[in-house]
Length: 524
Image 1 (cartoon, rainbow, N blue to C red):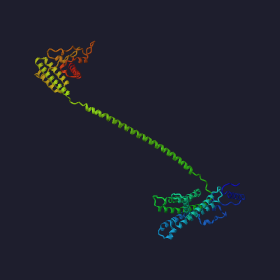
Image 2: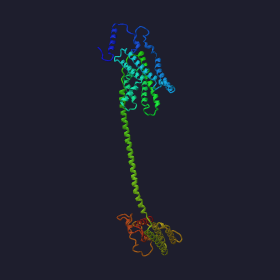
Image 3: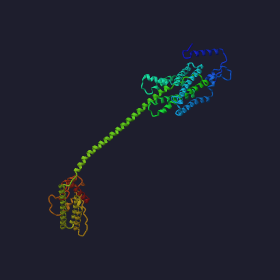
Image 4: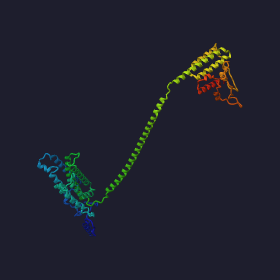
């Protein structure tokens, strides 16, 4: 039963032959210990021979690993050295040789590029031939190498004859497109489209041979540099000098096929001596990895944006709150300043200034205080002439009480009153002896006012008469309490009304209170 895929008929033929040989029970071919084997180990014409059959390609491609490494590294190095020598000598040589060795339009480098690409195509066909001998290639993967060889052949012909430049110029002429680097893009884009299948085949088959893998990546890198240098050439004004870009493009155009040739040479060695079986399919993690990476990037960027937005919102809120508080503080300070100015002005206006009325009041107070002093001195003089014995002590008490009264009324003139009191004591006591004060103890009545006891024996006016004493607070029974406030209001404190004249009500109360406290202290 045939299978509908590439190479199905040849594979069916090989399977039938294998089944037929197995049923005949013939001596099987000696295989390697490992199931994977190269082409030369599979194709043995003499199974019992010690040495395997040799192919003509063996003389060109040795089996030792260091020799193949030397070939893969030496070929690109040799080409690079020749190209650098051409760059250094191209300006010194004459016109005929310059047309051959010039790094831009030289025929030698153009021929070398075409020859290298043709060699790459031949190596692809050789690998396809080796791979077709594998009995495990059920999917016909060797066909990819076959078509890759044809694509490289076409590219080699175009590169060796500068057909790509002619093709780009023709397209630009008929298309009449005013696009920068249109000539380069006219052949670069179709070439990249043709290289999709070879690159897919190379990346799949060269994965297990690291030497071939490195050569392939070097070739791809050189191709990218060549495309960049061509697109950034003299048609565009960039930061790099145009001459440097042209030299870079020339070097990359020669090194790209050289690296590819070394990679394919290494792959031929791998297929011949290591394994000619198809490479097992690898699960491609590129697409899924890209999707996962894009998902992670999207989630991370979303979280980052949310965090940044939250921080910005909080920061702006804090700034706005701070600015608002600062504005409120300034507004309150301004309002307080505006209110303080009229208050200050009103205080300045309401400051007391000495007026005529105040001057008259002060003069009246000074005159009244002088009259009090004169009246007190006249009384003292009269008392000293009319009294004797016990009268001296009474006059002393009266003088002291009057001095204290005057001190409370006019504290500024205390010194004058003290001098007057000392003179009165000297007059009463000429010898300087001091008599003891009698102790007065009252149980049911409060102490009589001092002024009433010490007043001279003169007819008192009805205003100076002492009213009957009120019951003391210490008396018990049903006696009424002694109301000091009533006594203050009625004036029953024994103070001369003349001394209270001109004083305010508050000063009178204060003076009477001090007088009562003095009397209590003396009676106590």
